[in-house]
Image 1 (tube, one colour):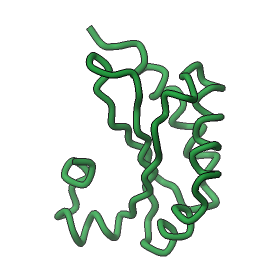
Image 2 (cartoon, rainbow, N blue to C red):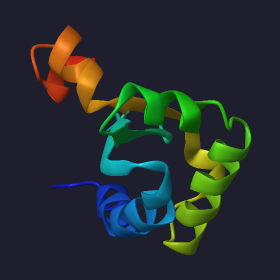
Image 3 (cartoon, rainbow, N blue to C red):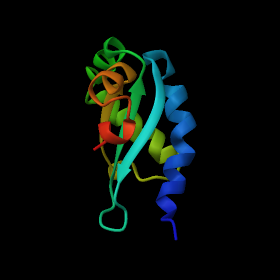
Image 4 (cartoon, rainbow, N blue to C red):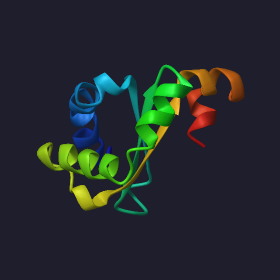
Length: 104
């Protein structure tokens, strides 16, 4: 049985994409182990390293904005532990194009 929190995270994905579109975000991923802990980490993917660096430089506002979007979609904002921004350029260069490896 799937933990219902995954459904909440999936439901907020379009809002995250729209909310950070101007910053170059084209991908959203999550890292969580809900059966063992209550929090989740949000990964935002951009196309370029420059976009990644610009967006990552907006911490701690970035985390606050992601938590607000989470709350609007029924996921407790305080359960978003953090946000990582990664680029397709880096994933292609350093992880053989695999987001699976990049997220580990």
